[in-house]
Image (cartoon, rainbow, N blue to C red; front, side, top):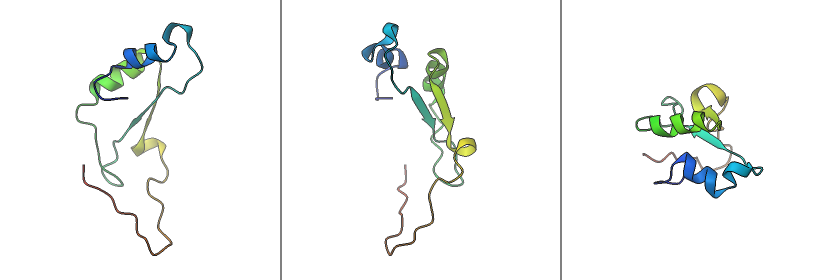
Amino acid sequence: MPEGLSATEVDRSHGGAQREPALRLLVLHDDGEREFAYTSGAEKALSEAHTHSWTVVNMKDDFKTVFAPHTSGNPVRRRAP
């Protein structure tokens, strides 16, 4: 969700009450083993997503692969948070 905007504000800006077709999805980056865990401070976003019936997926349980093994000469580099 855009920084500084609540799920309510984003929902309203995209049809809100009319419930226009839209993908309302929150990805929780919670897999510190395969990626970086960005869960600190996510409580408000998770609460609003649940309140507004957004789909919530998490990297730890819902992603079989986070980074596919590279096969070219260009390795995938992970950036620190």
